[in-house]
Image (cartoon, rainbow, N blue to C red; front, side, top):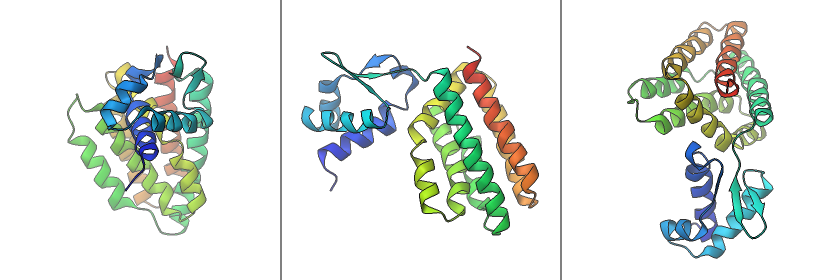
Amino acid sequence: MPSGRELAYAHLKDTVLSDPSTQGQFVNEQALADEIGVSRTPIREALLLLAAEELVQLVPKRGAYIAPLGGREIGELFEIRTMVECYAARRAVELDAVPLAEMRTQLDEQRGLGEDQAREFIDHDHRFHSALVAAVGNGMLSKTYDGLRARQIRAGVEALFRSAGRRKSVLAEHEAICSALAAGDPEAATAAITEHLNATRRVLQSG
């Protein structure tokens, strides 16, 4: 059974930090403790862990602050994602290990979601991309990529809110990635991945 700290850490990282509406806000420790059903001590312990990951900022006498994603952070996030995902595409094709069925399953799930299900849409987006990274079979690479999850989901949801047509574009871009991988064409796959990530980055940095 997970400890109070583990519950608080998972809830903060997977729910609170991935919600664009929490950006620029301080964490309400007592409200969070009541919601999860733990005391404030494990909440504070979890916040210390998140501060070490630079996901929150601890401000003396104020608490934990969730800073908005800045331009530099967005740039670095998508630079890392591009490097990892393009490598994964090339390597998966080389190994004949492209997880096409799983990626298409996630894409189909995205197609079936409503306009008010942005978080669910981006959850499937993350699974779409992480399936490709996991297919390489490099545990350290997968762990490194998974460490980007909270920022990746927050950025993805924010992009959907900023651009009304982004959802439709994501579906088309994911289809292009799948088509290139199905054809066993690593050059086309990496080009499709790069364009997909650049498109999201442009939406986020346009304002």
